[in-house]
Image (cartoon, rainbow, N blue to C red; front, top):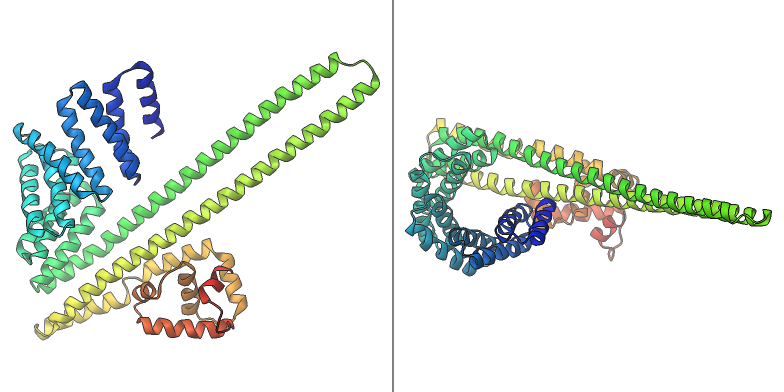
Length: 449
């Protein structure tokens, strides 16, 4: 972002509008990557205006595609559809299959969001056809084709067209393996589990469920490493910025000290003047060092606060992922329970084993990771809560941690596989062990620890 903004400033100085438009398009894409959708839209709209004014018709219509995608990110689907349809007319006349693939895929996504599944299916089929026409596509085109296949597969699942869904998910799986993309593999394996569940094929369900779990774990690890890299980058950047500020102030202080020194030499008229100047210089230098020390302490405190906020966001992201996984796993369990009565004894044994794996082992590793992260971030909280009541069980301490993260009773129920009534009873027992009065709020009490 910083480099593109610098490039735009240079283009303004040199009055190079075409290059400025190119910088704005790239800047819009980067803003979109970091979820700054308002800034992304503003950049692409400015680029679109420049292309229109200088008569770059092809680039203008390409920009309309990005404008449409920006409006999708902001939930303004009517405006998104309007811009995408304008670009569609232009590129259909030129048989530009690559850009038409993007347009139809985006229009299909809008139809799906609006609940028009039949229209979404029609548009995604067209997008897939254009993607397949492009024979010599590169890795990026393969990735887009896999995304279209996954969207198309989910649409087929909605219409219970399980064989068609399985076919496109298998195609997406092949591309995911080729590109070594855990994101594509996770989504394709998930779709294949639901597809074969619809066909009641136990062996295939078990096979792809066993593939989905490690793919999902690898994706979680990638996302976690990306967060760690981002935190390290922010930390290093902050250190460099702080170092620059301190060095700048030291240089300014040195200049001031040199000025004071020369003035003192030139103004030595008597011993009294020299002594007064000396003490004044020492006092001011000491005050400057004190101010620098205070600033450094303030910056360090702000850095620690920022680091704690980021770690808390990671904890919440882990919990939200756990909720999503548990909902998915619960749905699979329900589907398997529904078809138990229709199968023979051999298949029933397989189903029982899968349900046992789902109910007992799937979330164990993620819980361990969450608890380790929480202890590292809130070690003082764990120490204090343990001192308040030495009779707390590990489950009650876990409940304290989830309440402190503002998790609702419903979310805690989803995470722990316990009913909401069980959670309410656990909260009541926790209040008694913590010695809270009837009018005292448990959540407020835990936040104040």
